[in-house]
Structure formats: C-alpha cells, structure tokens
Image (cartoon, rainbow, N blue to C red; front, side, top):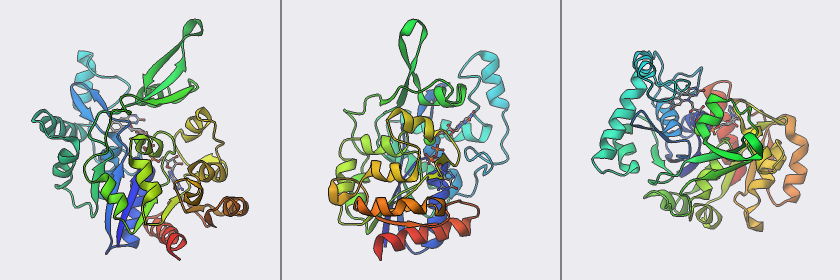
Length: 320
Ligand code: GDP
Ligand code: FO1
Ligand code: CA
C-alpha cells in the first residue's frame, strides 16, 4: 500500500511515527512543509524536515519535539558572542552539523529534495521524505507596527521570538506563486492508494504545502481517498500556535471548522474523511452533512502505540 502524508513538524512527525508502526509494510512518502525554513548564520535551517527526520530516525528530543536529543549548545553561544544569527533562536551543536551538511550540498548546486534524500539516507526513517518544494518559499507574518503601519516578519521570528503575542493579521508565502512542487511530490499524491493530512498546523504547515501551485489540485484529483486527522481537540490546540494562525484566516479553532475549511472533495474540497477527538463527537453530524465521512475517537498522541491506533482508525475511516 502506498501512503502519502502531508505534514508539518512536530504534529506531522509524531503522527507519521505512529502510522509507520500501524502500517509497517506500507510504502510511505512524507511531503513536508518548508515554509518555516530560513537562512541563519549562513546556514539553511529546515525545521519541519528536521523534526520529521529526527523523530522518524529515533534521534529527536521528544520533550521539545524539535532538535536532537543529548544536544549541547556551545556553537550557538559562540555565534551569540559574535552577534551572528538570532540570540533567541538556539541551534544545537549536533543540529548545526545537519545544517552545515545541507548547506554544503546546496552550495554544490543540489536541489533541496536531493539534499534531503542524501541527508536522510544516514538515518533509517522507514519513509521517503520529500520537501514540498525545492524553491525558497518562506512564511511571513503581517503584524501591526508603530504609527498604524504594518510590518512582515519571518514566521520563526513571530513564533519563537515573540511567542505569537503580536496578533497575526495575515500569513503570506514569499515567492510562492513562482514556486513548483519538488520532483516526486505530485506523483506521490496522484499514484498513492491513500493520502493523509497529518494533524499539523492547517495554516502554516498544511496551508503552505497546499499553496504551492499544483499540489492542492493533485489532492483534489487523486483517485486515492484523502483523510485528515484533526489537530484541534475540544476547541484548543494541543500545542503550538495554530489558534492564532486560524484566527488570522477567519477559521474558528475547532475540529469541525478545520474539517469544513479543508472541505469535502465531492464539493470541490480537499478531503473525503475527517477524524476528530471523542470530545468533538457532536461535530460528526454536521461534518457528514457537509459531505465528509467523520468519526470520533481519542486523538492524543500519548504513546507510539496509541498514535498507531489513531492512524489505523484514520485509514479505516477512509477506506472502509
Ligand atoms: P510544527 O511544525 O512543529 O508546528 O508541527 P505541525 O504543524 O506538524 O503540527 C502542529 C500541530 O500538531 C498543532 O496544531 C497541534 O495541535 C498538533 N498536535 C500536537 N500534538 C498532538 C496530539 O497529540 N494529537 C493531535 N490530534 N494533534 C496534535
Ligand atoms: N523553537 C523554539 O521555540 N526555540 C528555538 O530556539 C528553536 C530553535 C530551533 C532550531 C532548529 C529547528 O529545526 C527548530 C527550532 N525550533 C525552535 C522549533 C521550530 O522552529 C518551531 O517550533 C516550529 O517550526 C513551529 O512550527
Ligand atoms: Ca513548523
């Protein structure tokens, strides 16, 4: 069975780890968000690709959800002393090794997709990892500035430096109109037996992937069923800042509203089925009325086995 997952960082990585346990025989392709990527201290940093690689490779700091386990921060301290980079954005020493390797290959002229394949080959991921695009498409957040003006800051600055305390007025993806899906992305969606939308941030993770010209159409047109898992439980984000992102695009922070936002494929939307948490069971009727298959069950990723059971239920909902 060929399964293609659209994924962001932590939510996408944890979900995919469970999926691989539930479906050890499946051939899984992960299409990863690259909108959080940035140049920092001369290095190309790809937070969501790295969260996926480290988590699936079994080398992640699971408490934080990003970065390597058993990490040290000596190089970051040196960079801070030189005034290079962002003092509030910490790059671990082992993580910097990944960024140097990646940047070196990019400098040699390889596209990000080829670089990712080479870097990921070191770890036994059990899945193929594809960046959504080889082009630099970075998410910018519009926030209010002094004197009634607005300014745009990089997503990581808005989130990590100011913890989403400046209300987001809009999200834009620099350069997105001219970008193209990375090689293999459209085929992975068209040729899949099942497409899954991970419980990732619907705006800055999944929204950014779907904004790359051609990807949303591929999802609408694939012969495979498309199933999503809600990142919202009981009207709240499990972690992160998806609520602040959803508010900016005028979508309520609820499992039902996010399912409706993706919309039923039979009515021109992106999904056929939507898995919500048990506390959101009352939303299933409205979701079904909107043309979706809907089912409720606990959606907390407490253990890898429990996450595998969630992934298995999502597959059953989409394919039963
Ligand atoms: P990021 O790139 O690290 O922000 O990660 P993603 O975009 O992949 O996922 C972030 C989303 O994961 C957040 O909106 C959370 O609501 C969701 N999430 C995190 N843990 C869980 C969980 O245990 N269950 C569910 N259903 N969603 C989760
Ligand atoms: N998140 C933080 O909250 N603080 C950091 O200093 C930080 C550094 C960092 C370095 C590399 C990397 O791949 C990820 C990093 N993150 C950090 C996490 C991450 O950028 C964001 O939490 C997610 O992208 C949010 O979607
Ligand atoms: Ca992210």
